[in-house]
Length: 399
Image 1: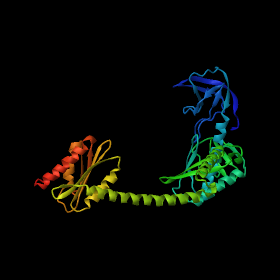
Image 2 (image 1 turned 60 degrees about the vertical axis):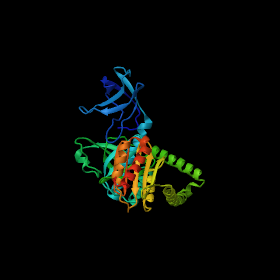
Image 3 (image 1 turned 90 degrees about the vertical axis):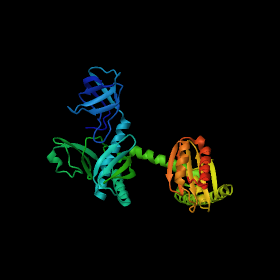
């Protein structure tokens, strides 16, 4: 009945262990139990911490859960609500009502889900796509309602009376229904805690939008949460500005310039890298060994990217009469074989025979194959074995 009530006196009706907690039921309470998308209040009973509050399903009683070692009298207790937590929830929940109604009016999007966590809140709308204009107009309308400082009131009505009101969502309950009204703007069946006037919400700010199947989920912040968010953004942008030695208002242009430079640098780096691979492949081919009528490059590398090894093998094999037998040693052995297209050798068969020596296998095509094994210590031995197989192949026993 009064969200601003933070202290109260009550009689203890029940007090008993519940799992690792002490469960207490009072004859009256100002503690809000978890429900309707809103988390429970915290606070104290006679100085003992109330760590969770739930509504008992079988009889509707509010159960206060305290540490099991808590000591409470059997009769009278005094309760105190954690006001900072309560008021934060009041700001977020009232802000949600206002924001949900704003999206109804601007985008004909109904709220089908609401969740409030410790640091942010979300609403799910029954629209998978919302335009930037819809987002801006709905947020602006919500904040206009906040700045109007309209009264927020609640009262209980019958189901028939509720049906006469312009509710955003028809009530699912029967009997007495609590209606929260933002004067002249929104009427909702709700049991949560709310501020007395919209001005106390402070500000409503949508900070994220994401598509979730046929719905859109919006993450929003109100009041102190929004203020803390703005403060964090201000610190971050100011720090980035200092690092880049530019004013905060010049950050967008500076970031665009840096992105363009980074893109150009990446392209130039890749060009230089490819050029280095060309030179490295040429140097390796120059140092190749003759095996019959072919030139064979056999080399083990360490600390390189496998893609570099593949490209080196391909470049070497692009030279007429050349075969590349390359290995990469790391936590395991990796092997890449390639041969010039006009040569009558099957790199796939040669690789399979070689990989057995390092405890593995592989596959590919006759021109290029890749594989490996779990014994990198035998890479040199394995590649030398491949050379010998090639030599035998040139003597009349193809690999």
